[in-house]
Length: 211
Length: 211
DNA sequence: ACCATTACTGACTGAATAGTCATTAAGATA
DNA sequence: TATCTTAATGACTATTCAGTCAGTAATGGT
Image (tube, rainbow over all chains, first blue to last red; front, top):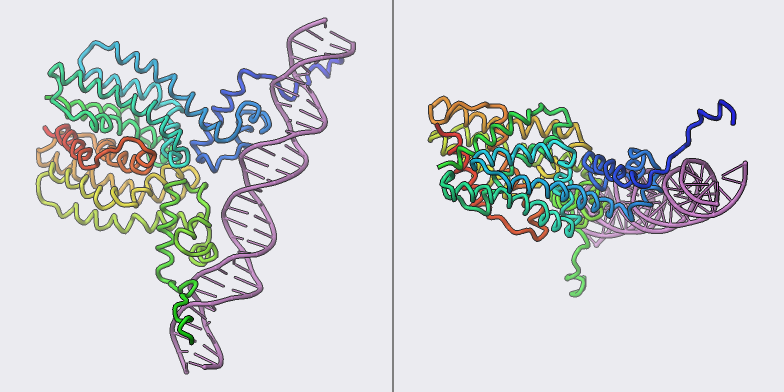
């Protein structure tokens, strides 16, 4: 083999294990940026550094790609999140603050946050997936808030509160921040500081909940 | 003309004035249900009771149809909303409650609410329109909250609050409710009662803001 | 060094749909 | 009633893109 031939790099590599997650990651980015229908699979493949044919080696269709992203993206993260909250032993006010902060750090600030935007946008086109997301992510997320509120009421720290709608209200500002960062924030809107925003939210919330 | 001929109805009617709003309304419904890219103009025309050709008599392109919906849909409603809030004379806590309630009644509960879902979904594909919506709707909407909070601080009713992020937090639960009703609510998720939800929100919020 | 296996490629096909325009008919005018 | 204007139609075109598959080349085994 000549010295020259040695520097010729292979046109592509075999990376069977890494492809699915790289493709899913590229697809999530583009779906969030452009929407599901407006995203071309050629572009997804390109961003993942492969050809469209390769994408079809790992995912059966565009729909299945989307479903895989939602199903495998968030639920695993959720498990450790739930763990962490259940084992907390401080005051309920501090638990509420920790809850918001951890949610933001582990999900909100990552690109997983885009999944919520995607699901809101596409719920009408994927009712079955929307049901799954609702049951496995939203309901479970709200349940964590519900438990935290109940705990505060039981301990006498919080005043009695309705428990079906209140968790939604606790979560709304965090969710809005996630959506904001994946929509208007990208389009030259004035930036928001997540740190400040979430501090004010938890402050307002805890004052509202306390006796 | 024979007796029979008299009952033959015209295949279509000339309704030059009514078409644009009927087409825009049909398009808004479908864009919100399915997303912009996934909506076929044949379906929009069908829902408005005309053919696709007619749609092109009134709108230059699919993009322009979308822009017209956003530009002409919300801003007019906003003007009267701002009026109403500026002329209020009661307590700041009551103003805050009225603000949320009126927003919900005049926009949130109508199908105009879908525009916010649409803009969040499509901000990446229509950066110019997103900027317009941001400046003309979001910033102006937040400004109303800002004025209400400032008023409460000045009168000594509310404690001093940061004024850039706080309006976002006041608005987030209302916006989330609007989004919810145009996504998961349609897909068999457990219903939420807007009345109860908004009462709890304003209650929590006002308690959080008061001295 | 050669072969066998298979991950990967990219040109191709068929379906779907944005946008056009020659034709039709509603309904105003005289 | 006959004529004229133009709102409305729907078949058509050009393009875009999801999904396919015969061929190519990376790599592990012998």
